[in-house]
Image (cartoon, rainbow, N blue to C red; front, top):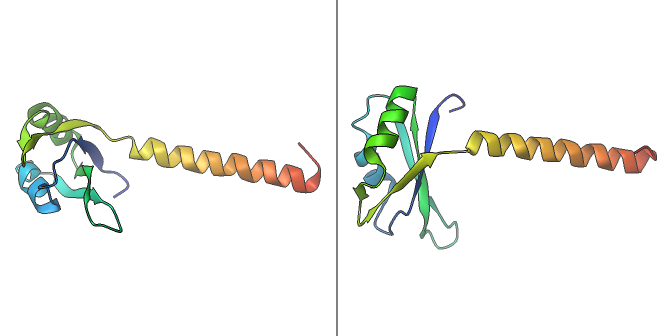
Length: 109
């Protein structure tokens, strides 16, 4: 989703799956999805995940109500995800690298 409101969920225990995270946040009406990030090789959790909402009000409420609550065996730490900013930074960096490469190839700085 391009226009969702995404929460970063940190400090997740090994017992937290997509389903556990979904159960914790599905009480919010505009909840879209929950994803625990896992190592591609071992399938072990990396200790964090993301939860998406359609409505900014649910996003704000969930941040206030769920931060520090136990999900699985540990209290979770929530903050606004910077996924959008990060993806913009990657695009900008690639554009800069491309411009520098073209400069090298054409002899122009």
